Image (cartoon, rainbow, N blue to C red):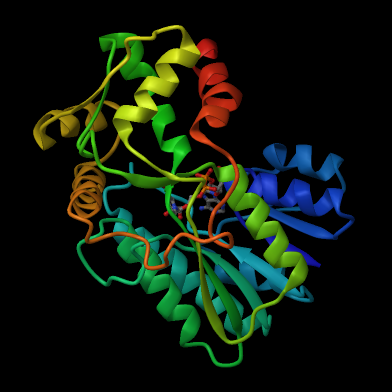
Length: 297
Ligand SMILES: NC(=O)c1ccc[n+]([C@@H]2O[C@H](COP(=O)([O-])OP(=O)(O)OC[C@H]3O[C@@H](n4cnc5c(N)ncnc54)[C@H](OP(=O)(O)O)[C@@H]3O)[C@@H](O)[C@H]2O)c1
């Protein structure tokens, strides 16, 4: 039995689907029983509950061979970092109590650092809490920046005709489609080819700037002159607050962008066949970005 937390999210849902297609038994965790039904129809055992409830998680992990653990992002919370710590305390207590021996943890590049990486500090601490539990084999997947983050630009493009943010326009940065994280996750959960504590970076197909991403998106949505513009932190903060982020959520995002800009937060591995993943920004643009753009009024 394989337990998938965040089973209705970007990485969890797709990993669960791939595992079910491969004939694995999957227990799918999310808060909302109705949203889990799509996976139940594909053969998963749905289990609705809150990751803050470690008793619930321990029951979910009991009798399982391996579990996929992810921290649900909640940047609208007044205290996103405090919430991350409560979630990861809950996960650690449940891993201990259930006696599960193998976990795959969704972490991030930058999780090697204990400070100045915004929300990624929570992932660093998550890795440490899992390492502190004796006798658990853990694989820490450290993907780079998600291509899906660009979906937040759709309302900005519709309102202002540009993409805007605080990341440097010409910063060459690895970016990954979440479908590739899901594939790597499903592979790791099936193969269970890790012992002790291991990290595995997932770096997308190539390094690409936001300027280049804007050109690709523009071409795909019929706005060939679309440009990305780096804006001041104060302006980006206004936009993020309008999107519902709390003041602390905004502060953490700006800190992470600064960490990416000055390369404090970066991959540790050199690019190789092992950490390179297949989906290009062009494929992401036509499969995910353009359909989402066209669906938005
Ligand atoms: N964005 C990036 O560039 C990046 C890069 C590296 C790492 N990461 C990490 O990736 C993770 C996000 O992964 P993702 O995109 O797959 O997540 P996601 O799409 O936001 O999915 C979140 C999942 O968690 C569930 N959930 C939310 N709150 C819950 C709760 N209290 N109890 C139980 N389930 C809950 C949601 O389902 P329901 O709402 O149905 O409950 C959903 O299935 C974060 O930890 C982030 O730090 C992100």
